[in-house]
Length: 87
Image 1 (cartoon, rainbow, N blue to C red):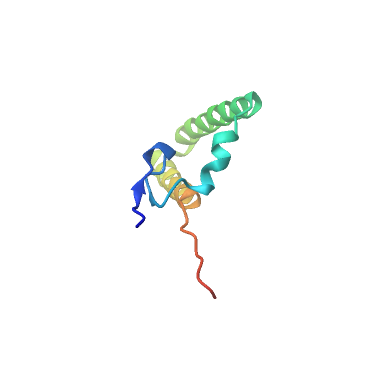
Image 2: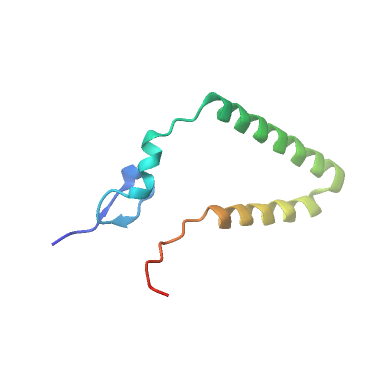
C-alpha cells in the first residue's frame, strides 16, 4: 500500500507518490551570470519606470495598473494540474 507524502524539500509542498518528475530539470540547471545580470537590470528598469509613473500620473492611476499586472503575473505563473483524462 502506497502512502502519499509531502515533499517540502522539493519546494512545492504538494501531496505526491514520490519525487516529482517535473522538477528534475531544476536540479541540473545553474543560472548563468548573464541571466542574473539581465534580471538585475530588468528589476532596476521596472522600478525606475514605476517611480516615473507615480510622479507623472499619480497613485490613483498607477496602483490599479500595478494590481492588474500583479494579478496577471500571478495567473500566468500559477501551477496547472495535469489533465490525463481522455477527451
